[in-house]
Length: 270
Image (cartoon, rainbow, N blue to C red; front, top):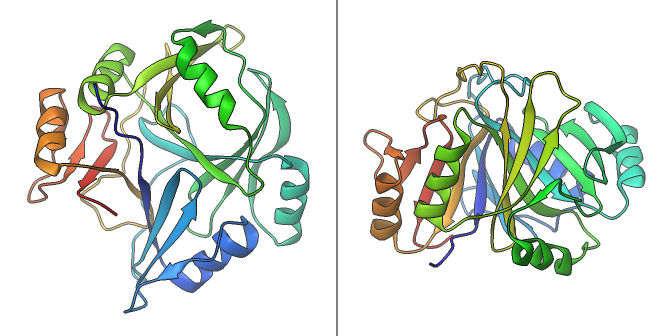
């Protein structure tokens, strides 16, 4: 079955110039391509694209940095020099949620915020899974190596039903399960499952504790994360996603949300 990797991540920003400067000057992504009307920009981040759309009056989303809140959690980028990059971000006044640290799974990570409060992660190193489900997917990811500039790696989500999520993204978009981290040290019953398509990853958080519905909605005009984008034959992909249990957002043919409120956009091309 053909897979459909994440092609882009859409963000709504209040100040396009400020956000472009953040992602190019601070984060180190290549120079942005700004639309003719000056209201949007594209930034290449390795295997995917960040699309920024300006909305100066966008409201706060209500999103909170609580991993028990279902749906979108953060955007992850691979780097080769996490401590140096974190030091540079600090020098530029970027707000951090977590300083660089050695993390479970054999990687080094750090978390920080973009100007509109989107949580971003730097990851250095290759994951060592507690449970490997598909060695081929694991080997393919390791073979890519680490690029010099930050490169898009994953979007993280919290979900209610892991089996449903796996079926949804496998049947709808051809994602495969590479492996899992089993956090026996976490009293919440924390498991991270990695779904791969091409060189992009959906990092899925599940907990034994009750999850909270997100106050954010794909139908609201709010700042920050908007949706992830997949490209291909729109009618076919939308049909497959609907058959896999994803529902269409009213009045938007190609914007859908999964059972945890996570929004997916389908386009012919970027």
